[in-house]
Amino acid sequence: MTVAVPERHGEVTSAPNEGDHMVKNITIFTTNTCGYCQMVKKYLGAKGMTYEEVNLDEHPHRQAEALQMSGAMTVPVTVVTKTDDSQEIIVGYNLAKLAPAVA
Amino acid sequence: MSDEPKTPQHDVIVVGAGPAALTAAIYTTREDIDTLLFERAVIGGLAAATDKIDNYPGFPDGVEGLVLSDQLRKQAERFGAVIELGEVTAIRDEGELKRLETTSGDMLARAVLIATGSDYKKIGVPGEQDFYARGVHYCATCDGAFYRDKRLVVVGGGNSAFQETIFLTRFASHIDLLVRSTVRASDVLQAELQEFVKAGKVTIHLATTTDEIVGENNAVTKVVGTHDGQKVEFPTDGVFVFVGLMPNSQFVKDTLDLDTIGFIKTDQSLQTSLPGVFAAGDIRSGATMQIASAAGEGATVALKLREYLEGRSHPPQN
Image (cartoon, rainbow over all chains, first blue to last red; front, side, top):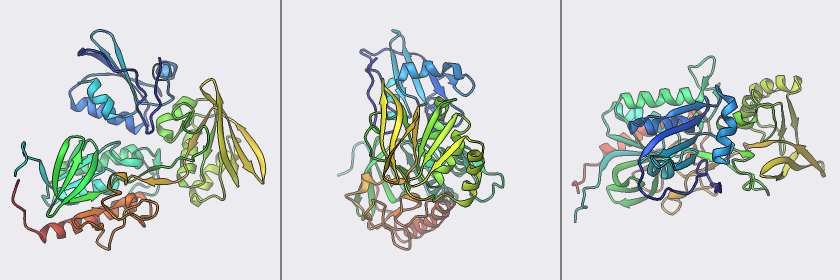
């Protein structure tokens, strides 16, 4: 997967989805101490969206999975899977990317 | 002519939601001053990204940055403060009202508080941008977990560099701390870090510049620096940079008077060059960059905002 490196924290992402598919599920890779992770959860919670959280402090063996998906050694990594099984991967707390991905 | 649809209006709009902003909001909302906060990143600001805060009054054993931020948020929200997640991109003077251009559309305020704080500076050396988030980092609490049992370099000699180095010792096998000139961290932090130096977990390199971050196959492999005129190399898997702060004032650079670095100038009332627009906390020129000071300025500016609002009548609604 080709990814672009952002200037600020966040924003390495795959290409936007074509079409208008609904969100099937959301997975967030987090750590205990990450403030940006709290913000992603807060945003999704405020929109009433459910998500699976993978806490890398509790499940360090899944770190490679987060790194492989995002291409970045950072959290949060939010994986939004659509009903057509396409995925958008948002790195960091980036509302400009996160909001349309879960709309 | 009135806007269509009607532009939302508030007594006070606070740009930012760090300690200064949240403290100000606690004060204004307790006095029933309608207050909206805009936060583009993390509620709590840099404080929320700090592992442990040991010098904020009232916490004899220290407090995690995330915990303090959450307590401040809850306290402000208890009195009616509303925090909107979004970004203010410009402020325009319309006399008795200020128009804020935001990612949620335009908003009007009778008074504005800018408390956008600062972000960590970059070093500006080759390789830094190339390996951003893939070996070069500015947030230990976010990215430290990726360096379990790996070697790290931390760059900086102030409180943040020392505090975050201490945090990173829970993951890294060894840390080289590169200090460009002399140590500026507090004696307490120096003493705490010294325990890790004695244990062989951290090595401090004084008078050592960071000149280049080198890597291959999309991964950092070493930092090249200079010490005593000689080239020195530090093999590493990652680099964390804490070399000072830069103000988040880009969005008002053409609107307000800034100092040479970009911090916002204020008068004794914490009012900026534009009447009705105030600044507090780390964004303010002359700020001491302490969380306790930011909270204090938040309280002060709230009282000044009230004085300002009481001195003016509500303009006609648009």
